[in-house]
Picture 1 (tube, rainbow, N blue to C red):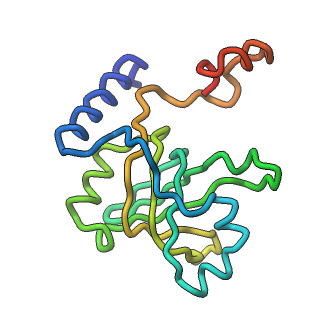
Picture 2 (picture 1 turned 180 degrees about the vertical axis):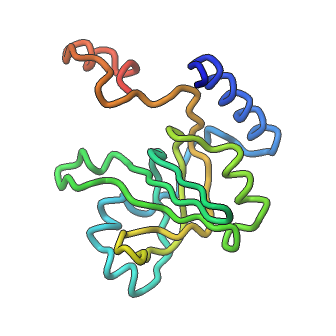
Amino acid sequence: MATIDKIRKNRIEKLERIKKAGVNPYPARTKRTHTINEAIANFAKFEKTKKKLVLAGRIRLMRPHGKACFLHFEDGSANSPQAGIGRIQAYLKQDALGAKKYQFFLDNFDIGDFIEISGILFKTKTGEKTIEAKDYTMLAKSLRLLQEKWFGLKDIEKRNRKRYLDY
């Protein structure tokens, strides 16, 4: 098993590859059109009209399968007053993105990275609400691992005062 230092070094190398490819790993703006909760709440309408959406969030899970990759990503809409799940599945496939761009994603993106995905909504065979990616953009490269759910700060006051310590 890789140590935290090796994983961080690997992510820094990926960051350098992203920069060498001419991609800004920390752009100042996003083109997000809807939150994930809005997309899920209006899913039937968006699926029927095949309207292109742009969603942004943090990668929480990746499952590459040859020429296709499923990932789950989430945004802060789960913490909104109309709290919902704030998480959706994305489907990236080599045919839609192109071989070079798809391979770039597999080689340089990790769990914890912030991503913007544009595409249309559909339901998988298992009925999961999914966005089929037509394009993606790196919003922020994560250099550290996400903390496990049982780790983190227990002291609420310290969490509120030092937000940078809370992932």
